Image (cartoon, rainbow, N blue to C red):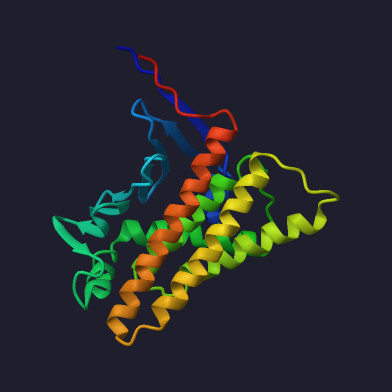
Length: 253
């Protein structure tokens, strides 16, 4: 049996410190690999952390891993039968399994590697808010998925508005693009954007139902579960874009 692995490298220019900027304008690229078992693997490496996301397009099951040289590895799993779980150093918290599950999960996400990941992507998101950088259509789905992944990690770490800020940014950018278009063409990018906006509408409904819950703890946990469903939907739209663009997983028997 022979297997074939397809790798894509995206030149996402992420901000670096002023001391480094003179020598290097990016941290090296966001790498996407289609694995032999048809899963999509994304990796972002920086001096203080390595971020990895593996998504199975057929099941929407996703695993996010953040590692650092001095930290225990953090693993976030969602989209599968086990629900939403956060693991670090052998400790596993299942969101919604107990009243304080949200707080317990946040306590596992206070390491240096997670903070460095959130700080780097937060700086990039602020760049986009100021519109100082343009995103090419063929890389937008990957940029948005990375930003949403970072926002989801932030939400789990205790920032209740992380997902909403990133959702608003993406909605504004898509809306601005649609306003500028002379006519609406149907292609892989616009189909992705339509799927993303539909997923956003479903998340709004989920959040509204969560906010109606009486228990504060149950409400917080349910909002995290809504966030995981929202991200799973966004990653599914990304996977559809990959397939539509002719970058479908390759598996040679």
